[in-house]
Image 1 (cartoon, rainbow over the protein chains, first blue to last red):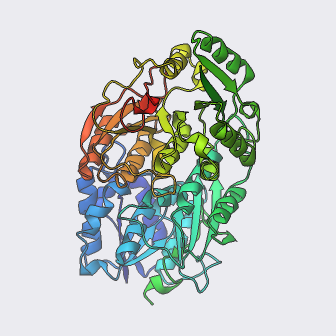
Image 2 (image 1 turned 90 degrees about the vertical axis):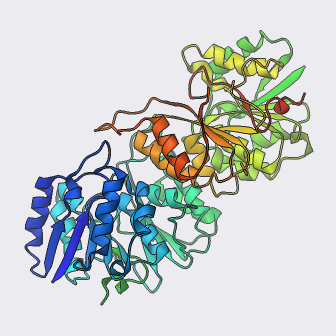
Length: 274
Length: 274
């Protein structure tokens, strides 16, 4: 039996959505999901005050009964708790999978830097709210059950990471930024103007010296600006990669959508502990 | 006679707005304004292609006939041209004032790092479009004419800088980020969700070790989110300053509005070359 603890380091989850995820998980008899009650707490923008989110995260990570910690959803808030929580992770956290994306990338990045556990970019329980979101949630459940069909197809002999562009850009130069030399770095973005995407690429690529290359996931739900930007998201990625002599490797099959694929940090498959 | 060159490293200016600024400038007989034709160029989001914006900026900076370079407006684009332009600035740029704010802060930051000229956070020609914007534009014209009434009132014996929060956050760790040890750092923001302000403070304060303190300008036009953030902009600033042992010094009289005051980078008054 693979036991999975779910907590919400960013924004609150809904009990009815948790029930739908538990129903899906029943399709996987080898998996047992436990939603930590903190998932349903609310405090302004966040799923409870910082201290409560830290406690829940530490409990899930340090409880030897669990094999994996799955972040319920993104939405902003992980930067307020990651450093304090990671400082309290103990030996029981070391062999666990940690799964999520979007704002949860902050945790994946911090864990990867600290070499704690196996961070995995993967759909979250929160994806159940999307149209067709069951497939996204099933992809992560399948991965936890040992399936490998949900892996991002470009994964190769290079170590890889996958992040939301804004999330990774905000980690640069902070105590949560992992060293990514030699890695394929995949980024995706949602709901940002193309000028903001360009600005984020300026910032991020200045911090990515020595990576093996960059892949661009989907840049979706771009708001309409008062005038066209004049270049596509791929043009933007190519421009800034060229500026910093970073190989642009093409597309990555990740994004804020139901097709979002799985990227175990490091070498593909290693994250599964198999 | 003080001669001022105006160019647009970010987004395009309008000829009719330039005419209104020239009319205001006629109130100051010691000033002569020259709008570079590049101000009115357009190429997608930008006031002409990168190469054209670089050329105009270098021309204005290196022409010994000018005493100051005033950036027409912000709006994003300076990060695409600043490094290349600054690399071509020559001796004639060294004693000039460079004035602007918002996205133009990228240029001010890069100039301050390179110790070229006298960067000044100040209202721009583009402020003429605001209701009551004449007063903002007059504030910079007055400063250029030797008046000191428009200076930010908290300026003291510490060197100071002033930036848009997003703009400065994007400079962190890049070749355009100036060393700010010992400085009072003032930041303001506009049109960002409070969760985004919180995220930017996480990032920025991780890069501001050793500053004398932080002052918060106005955080205006905050969009309505689906739920209240639960903390004010000042709460956010205090939280992240405390996290990094940065003294929080209170308010700064700067912002994306007509009351935006003048902050010469470094020691107040030094920027005027007097």
